[in-house]
Image 1 (spheres, rainbow, N blue to C red):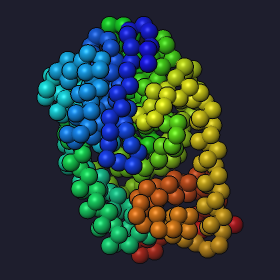
Image 2: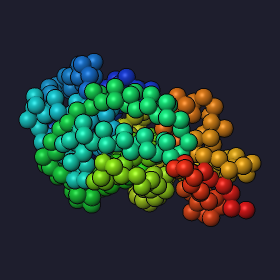
Image 3: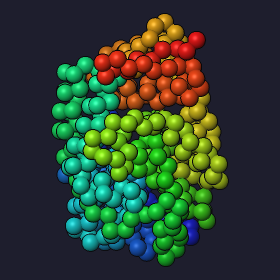
Length: 329
């Protein structure tokens, strides 16, 4: 799409091996020539990205800047390769820089954190072990990269023809960063807001937390607060990390709020029968999917339980290292 002044912003859809499908990378035709997000670390994705750049008369070697919206592997995987070939600077949220610089260690610490969360909330040890093995096998889709230009929240990322405001919008991940062209009303949104699917607020080890961190972050509470901030903005269009542009961000955010409210009430009804672990609630809602996608469904349930806890409608009890939830009335 075109976003004057400052030249065009082109969407470059890059294939991924994940259920979400293609990831949207964005080529900003400005000085410096900039790519926002990269696709996963695979030959197929790199070839597709090269072909997409060529359609606009560009090569990987022409890139002068790579900007990363958040830490997920479908968005950061090729960054190291692109930088090696182009010499481009790497821009990402300042708090994300250490995570990217120690990618393997960060992933291992994140997996330990996830295992702790799963065991604490009722997922069987053999399932946890299997899911940890799957997660480890996925690590090669990402790779380390050095952030040469850390971005402070609220700061500006300047170009010859435009300036982008750097806004931290955590929730889907701890590092979600959106970039606002205040002159044109364009928001490069990463996975913060996607039209065809609700961005999952995954429970993740906070950036900068110790590798042995065990404190559960309130991912959904955080994400709802981030969406409220975005809703208050005057935007012409959101360019998302997946799917089509979002032309009415307020309507979509309101739809997301309603969806989370419905899910919260459904969980409250399930709990009315008897105290349960978060995993047992997930099984009541999704059956076997709560096993095959245990961490995703666990994050969904815990997020909505946090809303019920904040309203005083639910309490949590711990016995033998496992937490159960019960209604307070």
